[in-house]
Image 1: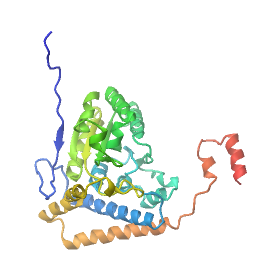
Image 2 (image 1 turned 120 degrees about the vertical axis):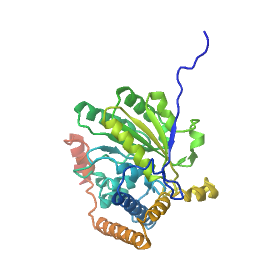
Image 3 (image 1 turned 30 degrees about the vertical axis):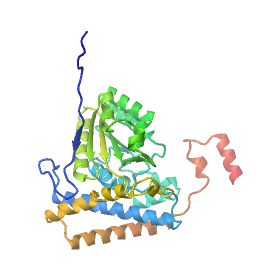
Image 4 (image 1 turned 135 degrees about the horizontal axis):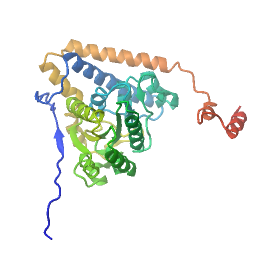
Length: 352
């Protein structure tokens, strides 16, 4: 029997706004000037938060902290598309995402101080807790998406993870299940090029992360992760598709971590300085500012005002956070099960 081609595949790449602020007007999503300003203001707010939280960790006012500098567009651009009653399943580098999803800044700080109460989602927003294990929450997202599908609520789920998670079995199980059952879930990979110190090129032989979707009959697309318009459009297309019952999408947001892996890491030991400097020129905030200036949406006065207001918001949240009472050690026992077991009651008495 002769050989024949059964199927050919392709992976699309999307960029709308380049690093010089040039925009493809035929691709830009329908956003009003006010909506563009809101995106910009949120980018500034979460970057100010990120730096403040880092400083607080260095001062001993927070525990280990995971920065997200360089990945703001991935988180703000996608959050802007989702409805409050849609579900998100964040990873440990998603503090910016939570803030963009109306999670109180005070509570985000509370979490990074080691107080799990900080991850209690606001009553009107469906934010699941941060996942520290790599990739395990992708399965949870598919489960919630299937529940929404069976209940016919119209909700979608979005799960966020790094490139390293795509080398874990959990990710592949989640993708396979979602593909088979057409779950209304969006997989958003913030490909920041490193799994801690391990470069993407050494953890997978796939030329792109997006192409991993093909094996599961799922649509995959790679976008410029520092282009907020590209992230917004790709997420909106994926959300609309999922909400209409047409199944999942894998979005690879090709970006870069403009910080250390965590406050216990030193990225200069494994990343060339030249590589870092090249990526700095692609920064999501810089390019959006260039675009907004061209459109007369940003001047020095507005820029300074946004930065000043962001600092005021963050400082107010820090003051409120540092006045919070410490958690009660007995909570360790009280909040494991709906009702405490006899053993837990005995252990709590011993603690007292």
